[in-house]
Length: 200
Length: 200
Image (cartoon, rainbow over all chains, first blue to last red; front, top):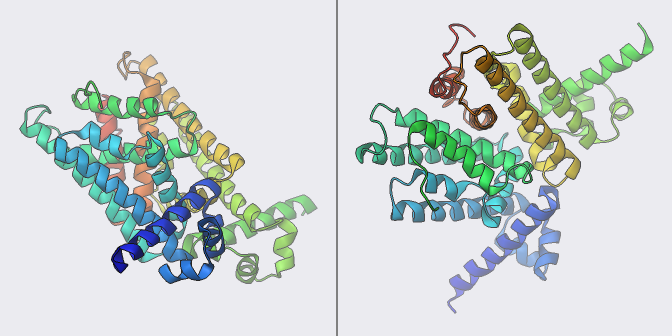
């Protein structure tokens, strides 16, 4: 195996172990020592890949963002106007998506006082709103959404609902099972006059 | 001055100093030493009021929740159907409300792995949704909202938009000035057929 592939794979393994730690035990459990112990390697190996715990934590955040981007892209590749699918790709309706949101939420406290990390988070949210607005625009072009709908404002509203539902579902999964998350999102699509697809 | 008043006042002063530290420098800056230094007192005084930093951090969260409750109650006392006012009382549209959201966000990372703190957060969100649904119900009774609107689902949608807008505004105040926060919320009220009040 080429050396750089091995490097990338082992780095990804460390990030996966770090993600498990944050999801199951919380951000405070993310230490180089704990990651080394859970990986069955020495702290030196972890330190070889990450300068410090903050960098490792950021890598878990970026990995979750990468998974979300891939899900979003798969939806848009299949149908560029699939607004409901786009929202479904990001809502915490399965184990992977729920883990991603736990990682993001665990990160926000540290991101707030950092200009760079706050800008990262702001950019992510802005990009989601823009994708939603673009998908709504496709529906307008197809005649599946009234042309007088302000797609930018509607995209922001859907993006806000997505964030709000996801956060509440992360803290309160009993009250927010996948079906309820989708019902609330679908009720907004219904208000816009977009019919919910039979299967998602 | 009675002894217990003095105690409560000094405790509130320590919480105010701790809030400033978290808002300006971030959660990691919240240490007993930093609070003591900023208060101009010894660490012993801080430790007299709070067992540890976690308890002090939770007190900043509870104080922010108390301020929010008071704002919400003032709106409802004036008009039990003032949905827009209720949302305005919670959105980060002024310095106090923006600080409150920064405190809540700074807390979520620690709340996630704690059953008790997660339940606190879940209860807060549920209570907001219920208040919104109740205010919408008042509008239905008054004939200001169509009787076929599902006020529970609409309340959840408004609660989700509130959370989503507030979080994005906290990370990206330039993109989310107060006027834009209100525009997005008002656009949802308009979809429901509720007219936005002239002044809020």
